[in-house]
Length: 209
Image (cartoon, rainbow, N blue to C red):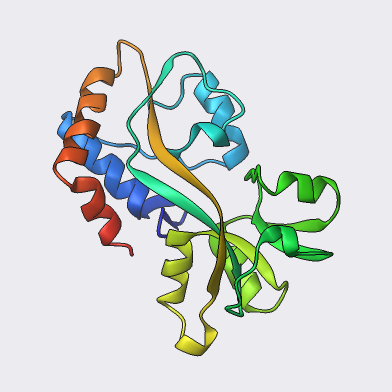
């Protein structure tokens, strides 16, 4: 959360769920959510198992199958360097620290620091787990997107809230839609444009801030 709430292996709530349910309704379809390991998603796309994938940026993918078309962005994701203290700090200033990161996520700005062993990655399966480990003192710093940090802090007492120290990257986030006869691709792309014009993206995001 706030991107998706998984209960017993099912996606039941969150920004991505709300967005895709609303998008499906606009084209007269029902959204069926597939929950799978992050590293298997690319294979599923190559096998045409996924019609719509939201919450993705071109810079996060190694490749995109030619049969998929990008929608317009529905939000901008800001990735932040986060710590328990509030003193401003850039990742390049860190030396010999373990940095909380999400398994399978790429961080282009930080990769040279990882490659040179200036910083050590410590992966967790989810963004929430990264923040929980930071709060528990398992490491001093972590990378988190802004929405997840705000969601985490709203459930913490003021003295235990985590702080954004600097912005690491900022990426437009969109959906990719399979371009095939059995998918209403053009209708979905038009629906995304209409949702943006009507303020529906901002309304969904506002529920989880």
